[in-house]
Picture 1 (cartoon, rainbow, N blue to C red):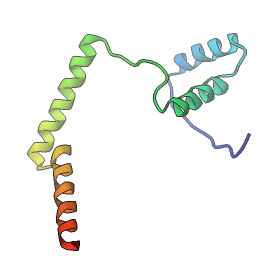
Picture 2: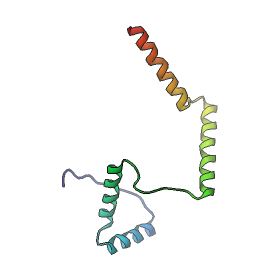
Picture 3: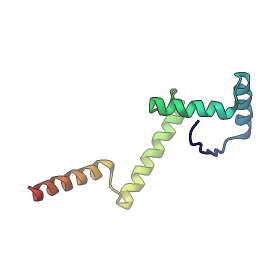
Picture 4: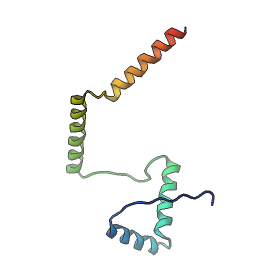
Length: 99
């Protein structure tokens, strides 16, 4: 089976109990079910199922992202586009100097 590692996860007790019950009904342990999930995530290089939010949760999420962006602007943090522009300028300058 190879080199094994442990994974400790905090989860709501009632959710764990229900997940245990479902896994057992399928003839496996919860540990096996989680192992299947992680292996599938690695195989697909993605979460192996669609994740979505209710419309009101999505709106709250977008408000949170916007508030984080506004706070970052106040603090003078660079945006991802600004960081990428600086990297591009640095690489161009480095190539110019090396030429």
